[in-house]
Length: 253
Image (cartoon, rainbow, N blue to C red):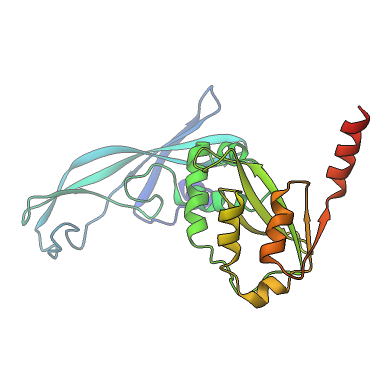
C-alpha cells in the first residue's frame, strides 16, 4: 500500500498524520490504521511555550470517517498522541486539519457534502455518498444557510411560488419556497406559509424591488393571490398549467 497515495486520494494534507496499514473487510468497508504525532509549540490550555514543559502522555484511539471510495465506506482508525502540560497540569490531544476538533467526520467529507447540496438529490442520497447520517447533512445545510445573505433590494420580474414538504424543525406541515421564474434559481425557502408571516417577510424587500415583480406563477392556493394584492402592486397572478390540468382531471373523474 502506498500511504502517500492513500492520503492524496482522501485529501489528507497533514504531514504529521501517517497511514500505516489498511484492508477491505468482507462488509466492503475500507479500514485504515494510522497515527498522529508531533511536538506541540505551546499548550492550548494555558498558552505556555513548550520549553520542555509539555511531555508525551500516551496515546488515544479515535476514528475518522471519509466519503466513499469506489462505493466503499472508508474509516481511519487513528491513534493520536496525548500530551500533558507541566505548567497547568492539563492534558490535550494531538489535533489534525483532516477533521474538526471533537468530530469524527472528515473535512473533505464536509466539503463534498456542501458541494452535493447544490445538486437536485435527497439528503439521504448525499448522506450515503459521504458516509454520514441524513441529520448530519441537514446540519451542514443549516450552517450553510447562515452564510446566505438575502438581497433585500432586488426581486425578479417573474416569481414562482409553491409549497414543499417540511422538516420537523418547521412550524407547519408545509413550507413556502419561491424561485426566479427566468433562471429557475431558488431565492429562499421559508419554514411557514401563513399569509401574515409571508407579508411580514416580503415587506422587508424595498418598495422598488416589490414593484419590479410583474408575474407570480403559483397553484390555486387562495393565500398567494391575496399576498400579491397587498405586497406586489404591479404583479399579475398566473395559475400554473399543471395545477389547472390536475383540477380538470379531478373534476372529470
